[in-house]
Length: 476
Image (cartoon, rainbow, N blue to C red):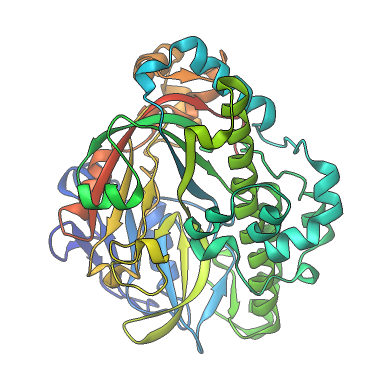
């Protein structure tokens, strides 16, 4: 290592140098540090630290890997009045996020035939794969603007969910400030993908609670050892991708006109309070709302699939929403008395106990933070500890890649993938299509989680293991 210097346990610093206006901190435990190569992700963090108005430090999460502009697993906070906003620092899949449902089902009572029927029934309702459109196009076309304006509350008014779901979604499933006038015709044309999961690392997973570490947190969240769970990971699909593409191009032109020093095209940025900045935030809010609605509609279809396969009303199987949290957003926050715009790209908001933005039922513990692993590996439910403010109330969003998609397809065989899945049911027989999503392409989720638990930034609540996974083909 030449760029990183030790800054305490599991923390490494790149001091400001050259054009950098902020330090960079990267969080890795000793095992992740030993295997970490100084790739493009560190330069991307240094580039972010060179932008006008950036607050120190810029953060790299333990699941960090290179991305477009800001690395995936990057957090950049900007001074609210003097700073910039960057579409690339939010990412292509705006409000990609995770939600977790609990059940009252003991998975040991589900044989493979029933499990297969459940994932088939979900797939029949929820298209998967790049470019797949929703089965609800007529409704979406009729109500597109109310959907992106009013988000999940609008869907629940139309019977697509339970009223209590709103208490278990970040921001109540609705981000204010959305303006349909800020989105392009191209973005609008890509908005027919509600209740779809796309491709890449997105999935619907049936699993179970393998281990409870924190009984208080588990009791508060309604988690019990041995319980069947449903994990949903997807975002704003082509709609959010187009919003990012549109505004990255606009920001690049505006930055050049304003004479801003932008270190890379992927970090094209404009002043938060500029016309382009305000329009991007309004368009981003549309995409955030779209993604919340996507996961909400999928939830409704999952509940209907359980009811259709197992019989009776879906309440019979609980299927209550534990939480839904985003990990590709920019949002205004006040942390330690400073007002800022926090860009989280591949990073999850994690509020400590007592924070006023926690849902009421989670005020005493902090809300559940959902951190999925790779296909076939464990996922975690954790909660933030006091002190997480030092990293802008943020933690990692997953395991993080160690192999690019091309490298994974080149180096991992179908036999390797099948062996690593260890009996986990997959929704397709075409294993070759998922070589880039094999567990071997990702960091060890346990090491990633331990990075923050070892320094008391988070507390583990429960560990989930997969039984069956639905994934779509292609790179989202």
